[in-house]
Image 1 (tube, one colour):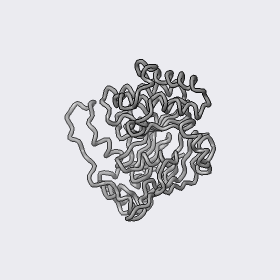
Image 2 (cartoon, one colour):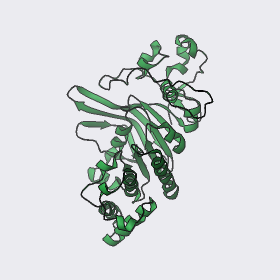
Image 3 (cartoon, one colour):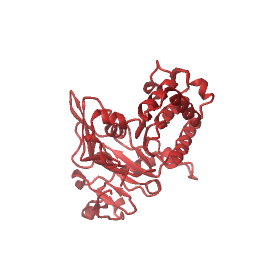
Image 4 (cartoon, one colour):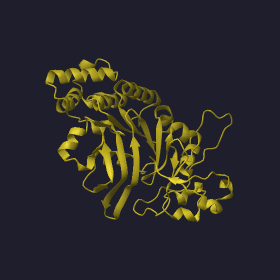
Length: 342
């Protein structure tokens, strides 16, 4: 049984201009101990997906799903009190900006100890010892002394380490990391990712890493989900995504990155156009207006096409029915039967 199973997740926000569809029918699964990278442009629905699963969105959001199962239990059926017992305990999240996520008027020690006392039932002394242990694990020097420091007394990289210590203090089964290396320099990024990798090996937690940095994904993730317009457009192992990208959007992301392994200088190729208007998502492929391979059939809802070994993509280029519509440069593309990601 998968650790996490999401089926047909849809999240909309009420605005003065109308409903904004931030996540549009997303489905995926996550196994215990797996590291899944979720990538895509800003506004593709990555962070909203995580917040929808955690039930941390405001009153303007409406979240529906056929199923959001964690360890076989459907989270939408849980009361708010039950979700509070799950959040921070079985499912923990590292938020994008630690300075706004940490309480500025509480010491680091108080913030870590509070979660441990609440979820593990430890006394004050044991909770303090656990906080020291976690700060040592995330390699913060003089951990016992720094328990009494406030968030503003830590650097950006150190605050991110504190967030990781808090998230892992109760040994969660699932850790969701939302842009954990944003605004950190390259050296600190590498240290934070190495730390998460070490702690995952030690605890066996599954990790969802939300990022726009494909280099981080290639280094850290076993499987990758590419999102666009609020839905998954490609899914596969990191090797499949980087060596054989099927969806033109995924190909565009990779073409826009500088490569150190190329002998000749190559001009970067940005993806033309703008992301779709989430107020008025098209009925067909959300990427069609920016795609160089656009065909008339792309105006219809797009199924997933299975390329084997768990690699799927949402694109009509691989449909036998579209063979006569393909542009000349896509005539040799293989065809694949429509299927679903399982």
